[in-house]
Length: 164
Image (cartoon, rainbow, N blue to C red; front, side, top):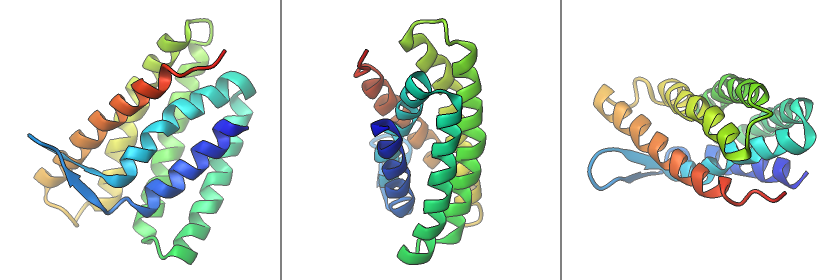
């Protein structure tokens, strides 16, 4: 249950701060929301591990509903919410199914396998929908690169905190 709450809160914070960018030292930039969103990959894996596939999809559905409310009440741009919902639906489904197929493997292997697909997929889908036409192609590539790297780092750190 706590993983679902952390997941939902992280997505909503990430949506709210999706247009606030921090440049990376060499190449890339990252939205402030990505610093929070990176924890969602492992929270979803924990939820899947302890509660199962249905709990993951229920949490995603609740998150989608709350994101629509967030857009309305907090004036988060609709393109951000739409990008978030589409990226979550596709990347989370891919992640959950990969995780499920590796269910007999050790925790870190399941997380690495599922996140190796879902993190770049999420970064590409979200940023292309949210920022196509807003940023140049080079800036968009820089955002996708930066956010993928940061999500991998944060997700890797959080993955080590698995409680048995």
